[in-house]
Each structure stands twice: as C-alpha cells, then as structure tokens.
Length: 217
Image (cartoon, rainbow, N blue to C red; front, side, top):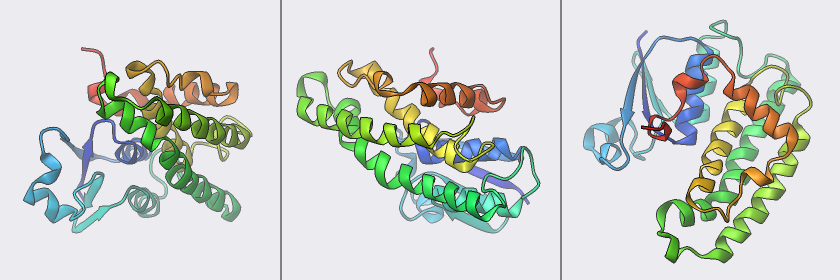
C-alpha cells in the first residue's frame, strides 16, 4: 500500500502523526499544505476531510482523518514496523497511553488555547494581559500534573503515542515566548519535563519532522 500524509507546518495533531510515521519507519509521500495559502479550504481537500483540517492520511483505498485514529491505525496495521508499538501491548500501559493523550487533548490544549490565540493572532497592543495571565495559571497546573507522570525516561516505558502528543502541544506552546515574553512558558516547565523534552528532541527522526516554518531562514 502507498501512504500519503497531508500535513501543515506547526499543527500539533499533524506533528504527532508525522512523528508516528517516522517512529514506525514507514514509507510515505508528504503533502505539506499551507494554512495561509488556503490549501485546507479547497474542494479537493474537502473530499479527503469534510472538516477541512489536518492531519489526513491515505493508505491504499483508506482515507482517514483525526490524529489519534490515524496513529492507532498505523500501529495496528504495521505493529512490528520501525521502533516498536506506539500503543503498548500490555493492557494497563495501553490504557495509560490513551488516558494521557486524552489529557493532552481535553485539558492541556483547551487550557492554553485562549492564551495562544492572543499571542499568535493579535498584534501586541491588542492582546489581553488578563487572558495571558489566566492561560499561564492553567498551563502551570497542567504541567505540574504531567511532571508527576514522568516515572522514567518517557511517559509510559519506551516512547509511545502519548509522548508524541504531549511534546507536539508543548512545543507549540513554548513558541509563544518568542512572541510575548509575558507568557514565559519555559519558566513553567519543571526539571523532569525539561529533560524529557530534550530526550524527544534527541530522537533520530525528530529533526526530519520539525515544522518547516519554524526553522531559521
């Protein structure tokens, strides 16, 4: 089967799928789409995903969207590929992996969403400092919880889909510091999470998946 992966630079859900593809060492064709260029609004893309969001993956006759569905499909379809399972075979570890991903998607992402919208989509003079302050407070609480989840080098034994999900969301959040020093996300990251981020960034496939528009020109 021929895999095609539709991505957009800097999207945390798309990034976790990209990391999964590289972790599994699967051959694929990358289609890098542009948010600003309107690529996600075209009729052609809507035929792949009527919600007009990335990521989307096609594998032969299958077309699939929603990042966790894609990562679970890749893990089940190609269980022995690459560097191993992203959802552990052990039932308890697999459940923990799923729970952590849900916490990223349903708690961490909504907690920082308003703050990131202020920083990334508004000029400095229009940003609401109260929204940024509230976002920092919510982020700090979430990061304390995730700091407590790190019992080893990674969240659940070896690298899992939970590590990819948390890292992609946290890396985007850290980018806010470049736009507005009031966010000071780096200052909220505890020592265990900081070391964990370094281990993710040292993975052999990390640089290949790094968002292209984040790279210095």
